[in-house]
Length: 606
Image (tube, rainbow, N blue to C red; front, side, top):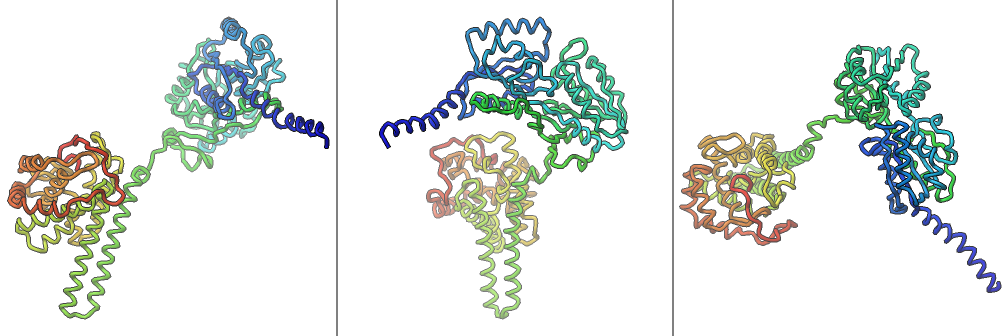
């Protein structure tokens, strides 16, 4: 093949592949005008605009565009439109748009009448157009997305939800949009059951509509379409009529657009404007890229399906089973389980662990009864069981503490301090052993507290503080599954270790010796260790400040006798602290990066 032929073939390939791609890129970067019929305060227009920009602002397109709002929902007189034309003449003078997206009928009519003057040579795509019959003469060459409203589907759902309905009252205004919607509704209503009367109300001021709605009786329903303007030309906000009529009507009110929801209406098979805006922008890009999309797109585009307000359904006693399959229910209250799912699941997990412990103990007891009755063997087995109980409960306490980023040695120190104070108090050996075994479970309820609160490095809000307080009640509930002596002791400590000697504690406000002795001992040991140790939200207090605080709280937070025993045996207590001191961070828990001042006093948050 000659060199000239090779060059020619390469040139053809370049034209066939490179130039079209470059041309498409050039098309997608052209200037686009977005012209809305209504104002930016109209939620339907907001939805359409969001859909349009989702295409024009996409990384593949990144079009240059301008946005104009005609605001004809409140003003559409010939004089106003003339002034608007003069304004656009001035604004667009010397500017040429490659494409225009118009939304709803008023903008389509305006663009059709003045396309030659304002948008010469521009491709035009429209969305939110009521029906094919509403396309004005002169719109040839435009691409129109029809706003197909599923009136029949909404009314069939309404009749199923309201058996015995004999009359449907239809409210629709006389704007350009309203006239086309009325005509489309009348065409679809021909397929309703013959025993149901359809009453299209005359266009009257909103107060008269409200009075009409007040007089409705069982067997009637209201179908509210657009009502933006009365016969005198007075304009209403998009959700003004739905809200007022739904509040006044003793019978259900159904609607057709998503912007009408949330006003007290029951709902319906509603339309969403975002899909319409997105489709119109896509069609415009197709035209600018040289493709040929349909001139009229008439399909149930962007239909959100059946959407109903749970509160309105309950107000009118409508059975939820009568809603269409797949319907969306707005404002449906969450169940207790849905609201507290993490806490419930965590509690069930703890209960399962404790149940396994109890089951293991039961198996060991049965095993003990079957083995040789030799006293030495029985004593050895008992020691093994006790050691297993202690180890399991201590391990569980350590696991719980790690959720709040505490080290395993915290619960070991609390157990050792508690055992020492119990012995000095004069408790019998079995009570001291019980105290050392169950004191690590004092914060079992923290398994039900969100980690974002437990590990918050700054001051807790009053609401967060109330959530943390609830860990005492959660711990009591978790350990309530058995009357075993170990779990009874752990349950009392979990519930009462934040009670105060002066009665100002929580959750029950117990006072003095109303508080379990085991809980009083554990509380003193826990607070001493908490103040003496680093936490995620604070650094350890100096020794002198900790001791001064304990003396000050004698007779207030703590049992005075226990405080005296504490200071009488302070060298032994500090020896325990030294022996079980933390060595860095446990497990994979992150150490604080620097000193954090303690914003709380003892008892508010350990």
